Length: 336
Image 1 (cartoon, rainbow, N blue to C red):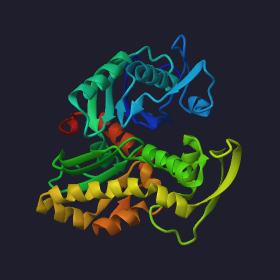
Image 2: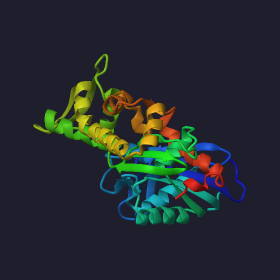
Image 3: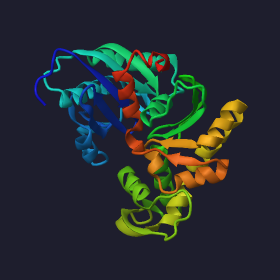
Image 4: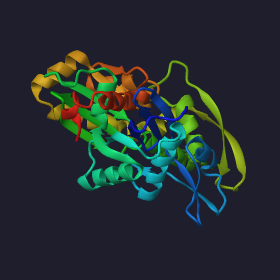
């Protein structure tokens, strides 16, 4: 990890759930949860990333865990800035705050005020020049689409805080839709479902484990069960319950419906020539949410178009952001 030359270029996928960092010449060097543990009194950072996630929902009154990004945008500026600075410092010793170019990924529905906040945080973290790229565009570049061609591509990026849907052609986003439904919303739905239907209170981390292990968008060939620890809401005592994949699917139903409906809305607004390109090439799914079992099958059934899951969907956005960073001049048209 030795000392670096005087300046370097960094690309960041600043996600609600995870932050990924790419350094020119080294590739993806970090993928950690976007979570910070701070001392409630001094506001000093105690831990971040995986270490802070271990503390999440297990802290005492002196420590608070904060997720500085909500729905893909910065909700807590100071903590976000500290997180960016510390994470870069983690992978690049002796960096001295000298970052020449930083490309940061932002949701397509972001406002000018939110863009300014991202720029400010990146500049305060040591970047001299900050470039922003919209998530679906970065995902498209990351999965190898030639986004400059006069051909329509539809990318659906299911992230932690948002699902970004975009039709891309000629290095621009023709139609886009950003909805506040993603992995976090799925976890929240699972927590609410078990509270309502099983009188069982579970934590967010348990909900995430349930989603990853037995969650699915359509019926499975062999349905699965999972033992889950939670608190019985009737007598307040910790209990172990068995939950089924059918239960989880029911809990996820509304969120998945939202995503399908948003894709249909985008397709309805897509110019016919680009629509025929999408019919030929299919819809590309990226983001961590794309790993939900049978999500591609469910969307394909709803929109009656082929749906393909990108290779390594979790890193598609940061790979694309990194590629844009490496070839800034060629990709100038896609930056916002």
